[in-house]
Image (cartoon, rainbow, N blue to C red; front, side, top):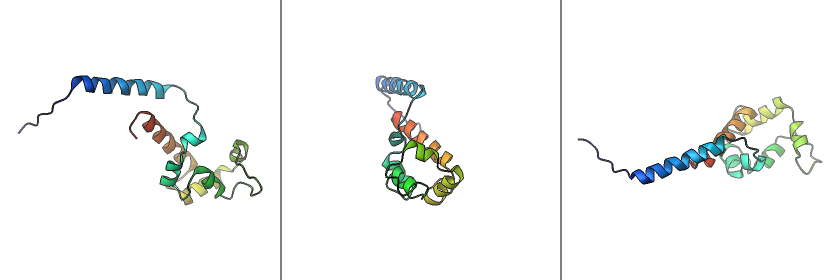
Length: 114
């Protein structure tokens, strides 16, 4: 028995044009803030921390006397040690894998899939 599906062509075309517009925006080069790429919802979903600053601080790789985590402090964290922290305290095997997942989620959100 065939299944009949009614599709509103205008609504479908509008949706496709909107998706095409969003794809063009995502294809452009972006500078994404750390907070935008790693929102608390991402961190809570994939790690044992409430936000990325807590996750980084919990690594023990930032000197305790430093109240703020600056880009310079973060960039000076040894990759191997941070990968170990990521592997032990998240669903990822490395910092690179975690970043990749964050970019995928950011892209899906920009395209309206999340």
